[in-house]
Length: 188
Image 1 (tube, one colour):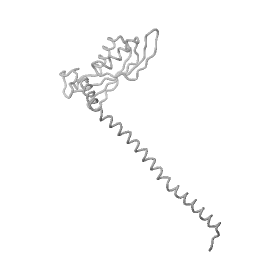
Image 2: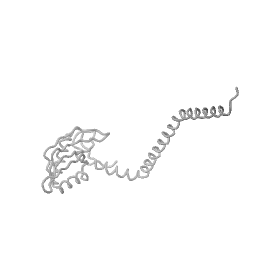
Image 3: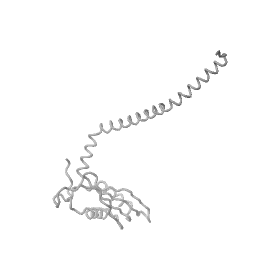
Image 4: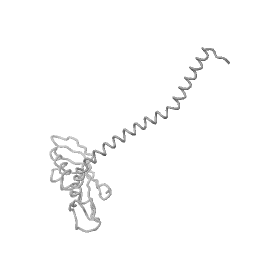
């Protein structure tokens, strides 16, 4: 059978369109995989850059970890920690002029060798200056205290009130007794 030039051109065009359609259907997953690989490569590059920065600063981080671990107090395993940390918080509040009206101790959590005890202060009142002093002493004082979820409302004059969560960090020794009671741990 002989094809006319017009039929041959139409057959060639139909073949090209069919070949193009088939290749686009078959190539779509490959193109998507290339995009996924490129995205993964960029993520790995970002992770490598972060890891490289961290490794370059590892001496500084080791010094900070050593300084921080020296501040972590060690207590006997049988010591009642909620009473102790409530006393520490009350003492800090009275020294800085913050009046705590309602508070509640949360459940003690263990994070590896460390423990964390949350204290929810639902109602407190202070001047702005006293609040700043309290927050500074909580952050940089001798104990490891971390104020989280601070909510402040203005009251009359320079008085503020609100609520906050105070998290206390410490380590419990394996032995019981008062040998290391409230003594900061020496660096390893």
